Amino acid sequence: MQTLNTRQVYENPWMRLREDKILRADGSEGIYAVVDKPTYALIIPLDGERLHVVEQFRYPLGLRRWEFPQGTAPGMADTDPLELAARELREETGLRAGQMVELGLLDVAAGMSSQRGRVYLATELTEGPHEREHEEQDMRTAWIERKEFEAMIQRQEVTDAQSIAAYAMLLMRERQ
Image 1 (cartoon, rainbow, N blue to C red):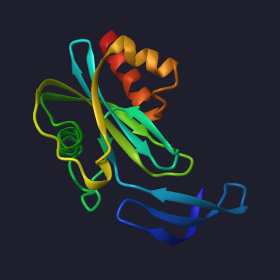
Image 2: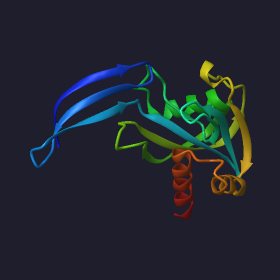
Image 3: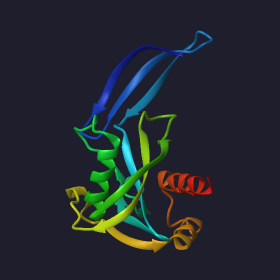
Image 4: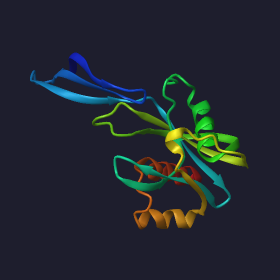
């Protein structure tokens, strides 16, 4: 597939929407709408059998959702992913990790977005004050047992695809 031209449709500090005119392998033309967002970090804070999760209102869904701490840094797209992970963990939960290990890479919605995410396991945790952004003022946090987290997935209380995929990465790492 070849990009013939591209035009920016919309932009704000968190994302850019572009429309690309493409040429397919068979010679036919088409268009792709692409949401460009910076790389994000997702962190699994683990203390023994307890996971630290956050709950916040997700405007596009109109629902509050439980998930692992995660985010990007608008205006800081070139930030080292490990630094971004430490920042997001501290910002959303107040936790600081003595050890942070990368578990893998996730593509959010590869059919429409260029965004990718780095997943980290955070251990040797110490608590401190959170440093939430204005948009995160309604965020809640909780320590939950791993069995309860799995039950929350089954009850559809945790539906964040990135959090569920990251947890699968943790399980696979533990089997090694």
